[in-house]
Amino acid sequence: MALVSLGRCSVLFGAISAVLYSQGIPRSLFRMASTYVTGSNSIAYVTAPSEEVAKKLARSIVQQKLAACVNIVPKVTSVYEWEGKLNEDSEVLMMIKTRTSLIADVVQLVKNDHPYDCPEVISVPIESGSEDYLKWVSDSVQQK
Image 1 (cartoon, helix red, strand yellow):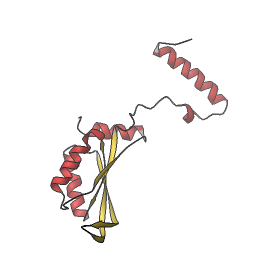
Image 2 (spheres, rainbow, N blue to C red):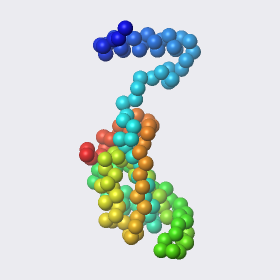
Image 3 (cartoon, rainbow, N blue to C red):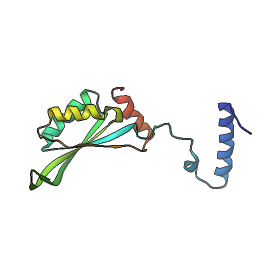
Image 4 (cartoon, one colour):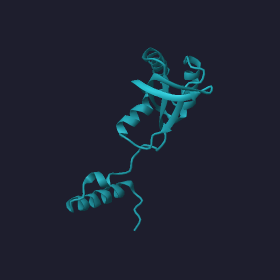
């Protein structure tokens, strides 16, 4: 039997939940589906030569509503080859939480304002997480 009405679905889900819970199955295992759309938010990673540079970039990114939050992680060591030479530098890492649709704008801002010739800007889509937090990220930035 197919139930079309949302009201009936809610009643049916409630009844099924009660039965499962009475059998000792935790409610967390049969929650209603998430409202977060997988990959709609991303984390962009950017390294900077100092905390001062990272803070300046972070302020600009957040003030322009390109990110909800930028975490600055001090003292990371980067080992890399650049122009044929092996380098080992102390840097800071920025973790920028934003909408995936705004990554190109974040990249452009970083390229314009970063002291490096070729700044690192890479992003990873967020698969899942705290629904409240992910909603806050989406609500805090520009719509695009």
